[in-house]
Each structure stands twice: as C-alpha cells, then as structure tokens.
Image (cartoon, rainbow, N blue to C red; front, side, top):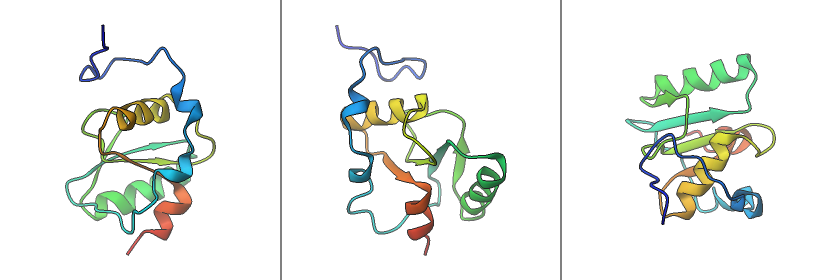
Amino acid sequence: MMPDITDDSYESEDNDYEKVDPATFAKGLDRIEFKDKIFVLTGFDTREENKITSIITERGGTIKSSTVLKTDYLVVSGDYSSKKYERAVELKQKGKNISIISSEQFYDLLH
C-alpha cells in the first residue's frame, strides 16, 4: 500500500533522502519567486532565520514551520539531515515541485 503523502503528519520510513545530492535541486533555478509562495527554513540560528524571514515576508512570501504539500521552497543552512529536508526530498521525488536551496543559493538568487 502506498503511503498517503497528502497527510502532513506522514513520516517516511525509508532513507532515500540520503542518496540525493542537494546541489542538484536548485539547478536551473535562476530566481526566487516570493509573492504568495510558501517557504520553510531549516538549520538556521535565530539571528539568520529572522533575517531571511524578513526578506521573504517583505517580498510577499509566507514562512511555515513544517514541510507540507503546499511548500514551494525549503531553504537549508548547515547539513541536510533535518526532518524538514527529508520530507521535502520525499515530496520532490514523488513529483511535487518544491525547490530545495541552500542559504548561499538563497542570497545568490535574490534580485
């Protein structure tokens, strides 16, 4: 039986996310759309998270605390081992159009 990925509480039992190269997710992304987009942040210290949150909300984006089907962007600082990252990779592998980017890529893509 396939898991129901529409259930936001679903957690993967397999570890396919470990096999994914995070650098490939932002490939081809040349800018970030902010207006009416949902962002999830992971791995940030409080100061940096507040800074990125301000940038996103000032440009019309919304911050959510967990990765859900409606997530448009996951911005990652540090290593790629959080539950938010695992969930985003799982959704992406199942066809969801979610952009997973590092904090460095986030700043590079600001226009």
